[in-house]
Length: 162
Image (cartoon, rainbow, N blue to C red; front, top):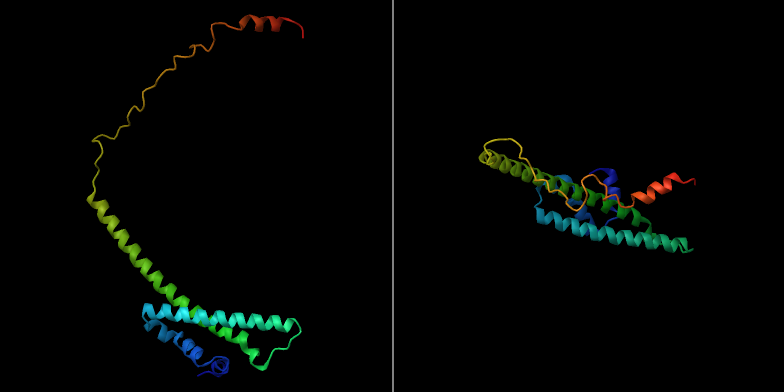
C-alpha cells in the first residue's frame, strides 16, 4: 500500500474506508450491476454528508469561530469520497456504453434484414405524375382589369396639375 494512500485513509472511518476500497479498479470490474449502483448510492450519501460538514465548518470559521481538531480533514474526506464516486461513475458509464453499442449493433442488423426483405413495392414505372389539376379562379377578370371601373377618375387625376 502506498504511503499517500495510508495517509489519506486516516481521514476516513472504517465504513468509508471499506467503500473506497470497493471503489477501486479490480473490484469494480468484477462487481455486479446492482452492487455497483448500491455502492454509488452509498458513496454519494457519504460524500454529500462530508461536503455539508465541510461547508458548515468553513462558515463557522469565517464568522470568527475556530475549527476544532477533528474538523480539519473534512475537505480531504470529501475529496477522497468524490474520487471514489468518479471511479464508480466511470465504470457505470463504461458498462452503459457497452450496452448501448450492443443495442445499436442489434438494431442495425435488424434494419438491414428488413431492408433486404423489403423490395420496391411502388409502381412499375418511375415517372413523375402530373400532380394536382389546376383550378382557375373565376372570381377575377382574366386581364386583371375590373371592367374599367375607376378608370375615369384615374385619367382625370393624371391630367391635372398637382
